[in-house]
Length: 170
Image 1 (spheres, rainbow, N blue to C red):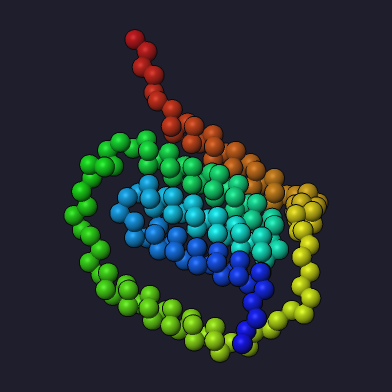
Image 2: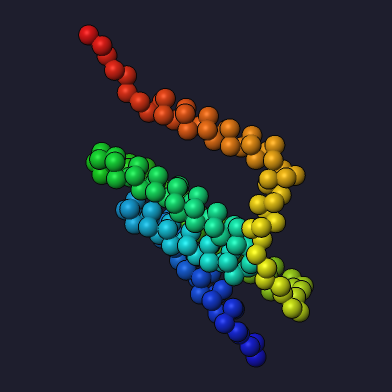
């Protein structure tokens, strides 16, 4: 009999939440429902990162994906008023084949996971990683960090230039 502790139970619960939310993202007929299901999937991934002692990735997941990308998707859906009037004429014609491929993939992954020689850490250490990553970003990797910040600044300026409307002067 396998003894489960609280860590395993929380991990499996949020793993199931992640799978269920991902299925809802793919199969929801309403884009708003799909976007909110994406929120559930992103929260579950952030919790899994916290459980795996990857606090920097968890915070990045929350700030960038939930705070930026998901809000952008929701604004795009809500600001596009004509999206409700669009009729999709070519529905997914290969749903059966896709289901069969997904089923075969899950079975193969299950067989691999069952037969894999899993190693278990005796005493896992849960230490924060943000301090070490921050120190590396501001010392050894300062040049790539600054290049990425300049690239993001150029992307924001480009988005503003593309989004502004032309003002015609009489």
